[in-house]
Image (cartoon, rainbow, N blue to C red; front, side, top):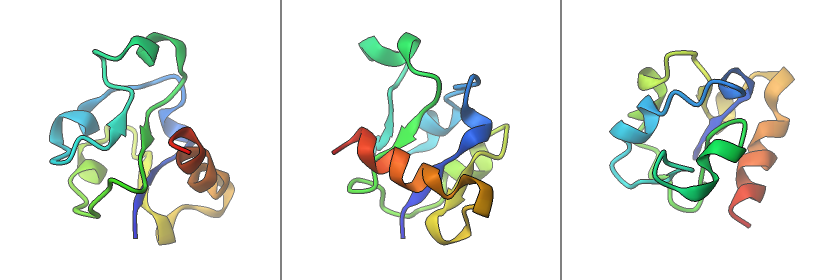
Length: 85
């Protein structure tokens, strides 16, 4: 089960989650060219190891285990996956 970044991240992009991810599956990082042009961060579902380190690091509570994504944000499961397709 992967983790998913949802709507509270839109417009925030705090990147605290990036700092704690042991496999660097959260993008874009502040060093990547498209960081300034996207509205939120994304978790690569193929690289996520389901460690959960990102979830408590998020200051806006935008990260959920896929099975726990709130109903109003279910579309973010696909949005995160499509980012890396």
